[in-house]
Image (cartoon, rainbow, N blue to C red; front, side, top):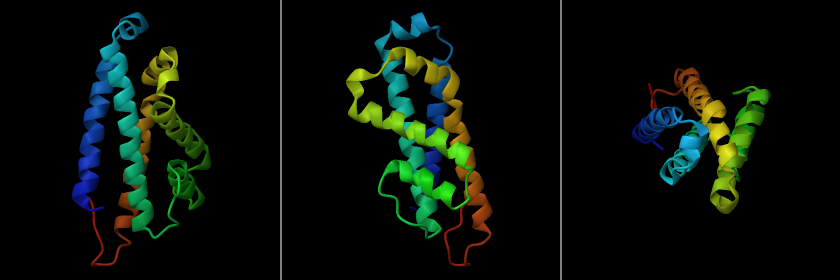
Length: 151
């Protein structure tokens, strides 16, 4: 994955974050009574998590770390390498678990839980992006002159 690809993921995430912030303004009744709002949140949360996983996989590959087999392992590997606190990793693994529920158990998504995630936990998406950007920044100076450089 090249700088252009990473920047595309970041731009995508920023757009998703803006739209999720707009959707946060609705009360539960306004949110739950409108399928377009519900569907939009499901889609924006799922694709945000997937974009974050993609960035995490890039970091792992770029640093030459073990290749993750599952999406949760992306977070586990970064935590095990000391690149993120283990307490934070648990939270992000739960996020990946929610993404898996949306993809595989889409017919059992609890709208109240989705609304709670939107209102209280979508900040974790932004935090994980910030953490990934910090990891990239910390390691960009350690690159060989011919290596990929980002910001």
